[in-house]
Length: 395
Image (tube, rainbow, N blue to C red; front, side, top):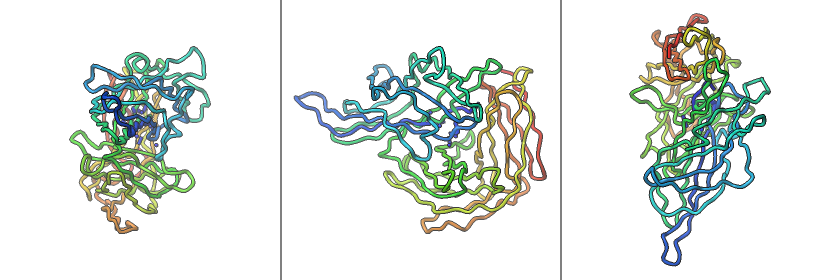
């Protein structure tokens, strides 16, 4: 929508990826254990640096305790799925299966193995390249990717469990080897306790639902606003009772020369939608932060996350993720402070205040992470012009 970008939800994003599981009604019969049924759906967050991210799901397994697993088949003949077609609230059904009533702690996603030549079962296409590169997914083909629950299936009820597969944050470039590794960042969200956010902003803008944590901002869900209308949907997101409110960050494309807008403390209603209305960002100068990434002394690959602190809300926000595969990188950043407004149910939301604190305006923290998990952070000041920031990582 959130790739030397790693997967947080298997698509903010990638850019931009997720699975949904629906357990429908059905009681047990003949004295047996009560049963439900499972309808599996897929969604994604935005991906950065890719035109296509393909995966092929072999099957899904679920477990009540992390040791015994129940396999769930997907729809026969489904084939490859392009995660980047599943942003902005789009879902794809993977199939249905019966499921015993109870509480389940883990979900395991198992992908099919790649063949020896394209089209591969799991692959990426770099932006503008037109060429498929296989995704290395050894764990996904053997034991599968584990996603923590819990979620509960009750007799005679339907449970929707969304496995949000963030392609932007799940693909790792393995140094100079040229391999692309799939290390999914996946979260499970039961839709009985989740809702959605909708609105309209600059076409093509990155839109993130974020929360604060002790280690920094966390993107709960990300997407890319429709390229024509600017409409966006952030879904699913845990409701305010279970996950708390979120801040919605809207980062316009650099070509539009528009600033960032943030709506704070947006409530999430279980089974409902929070409408934010239409936003028109203010003009802003856009500068760049660029440089070179060295990994163990040679040009390498890194996932570079850009964050900015906003004094008016006393919070720090992630403004996007940039991927580098060969060493050089460049990211566009607003030179003026973002505009923030508190959520109100009365639309339009218009009481925006610009952050003019000299300690914040045009100042970003860039954090580079290589395939080995080495992390280096540096400050980029683009308030008066473009900045050069180089990274040297030693795994």
